[in-house]
Image 1 (tube, one colour):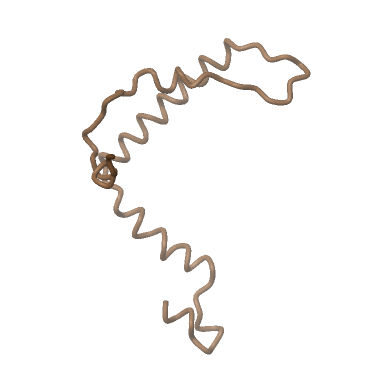
Image 2 (image 1 turned 180 degrees about the horizontal axis):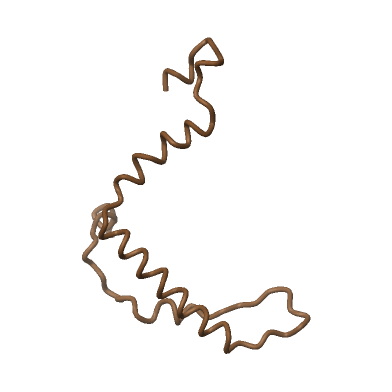
Length: 93
């Protein structure tokens, strides 16, 4: 942070250097298990998206197309309470 305040403009970090400094610690925190889960979810999304996309017919004059979320959410657990980080902050009346 102090480097950004340096009087000499040449000693200040560039925007690219700042982005690298901010992103590097975040990226190193993600462990292998999370990476595997992300890859698995992405593969699932790709296979489901391609199969549902091919079955839809789109009107030639349509500006927007909609799609159901059901293929992406049907296999998700409805009551997954294994991650309670955020639930600790919930205020119950």
